[in-house]
Image: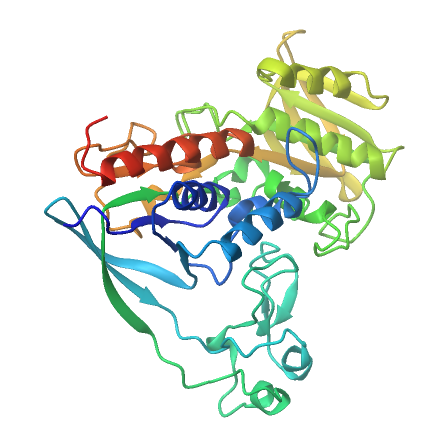
Amino acid sequence: MNNSAPLMVVGAGISGVTAALEAAEAGREVILVERDPSIGGRVLRSHNYFPKLCPPSCGMELNTRRVERNPRVRVLTGTTVAAATRDGEGWNVTLKTAPAYVNDRCTVCNECAKACPATVPDPFNLGLAEVPAIRLPHLDAWPQRYTLDRDACGSGCTACVDACEFGAIDLDAKETEETVAVSAVVVATGWRPYPLEKLDDLGGGVLPDVISNVMMERLVAPAGPTGGEIKRPSDGAVPKRVAFVQCAGSRDVNHLPYCSAICCLASMKQAMYVKERLPETAVTIYYIDRRTPGRNEEMLNRVDELDGVELVKGKVGKVERGAGGALKLRVEDVESGRLLEAETDLVVLATGMVSNLDTGDTPFAVHTDDDGFGLDDNAAKLFVAGVARRPEDVAASVRDATGAAAKACVAATGRTQ
């Protein structure tokens, strides 16, 4: 294996994009592989992120411009790793790219979407809205190219083809496959939220007005399913009371035994969302411990001082349907030593982060810790970055990805670390 062979980064969320750019700007050729039709990952689903509470689209736009301008980065979207084998000092990796039903002639004119008669649940908005089967994945998508859910098309339908005057749609496109030799690999496959459906005691997957913290991010986003308005999914009503339930399925032997590190801060950020949009709405945060390390303690103090926000040290054990459409919470109030009942209109569960390494979608033999998060393998020139490696926020993921890129660059040269 020639140590001048490119590096491969698998996953193009904030960690993968960072790792690819840092390696490329250090002089390495990089192949960046992303299974979705556009890069950016889960970060772009957030309304605002830490530490500046600014839209993530700003930071990702800077990164996509860097990608566009760097000839050392080859980006393959709609692509998965089908096989990977060690070959001497590096890897042989087989990549499969989904059919390109919409090609580079696309001008994002939206005429195809207007003509499309089929709709599908919007994956970007977590299924909270319906979108045309052919569409731009989301407003900040890069590449700026439409994608088509071919399985949603009716038999013989060519409405999108007929509407496209640029010849950008090929309904007969086929999957392609290639095998590449790479000198080292960074796995940045990211995370997914712990499933609501596994938290049925808390109303998850049972009561429509029990949502997850990632769903709340989409509700408050201007490009979200409600245009940024906080509404109850069941009836579209504005909630007068909102309850945040911390450690929903986390630090629990029956679910996730670990703390995901960012959930307390995420709920505090979302409590601020609620008070900014709905000043009269009462907010209660039920917590086991308040974990806001370092300078993030300032966020805790800001939220604790907000009028209409109450922080209650107590474990929510049950969420049920109450009277008149309300939700009833059964709470163990730790400080008073009593079991309490409380009512609210909307419950937001702070669900934990689960590494995507346990899905089996990546054929690399990544070693993991007891919680399923990845470990570096220097001998195999296989490195892990971002939340695939440990639960962390965006800033920490960027730092972690920079380190992974440095380690991969060193390993690719054949030098020991």
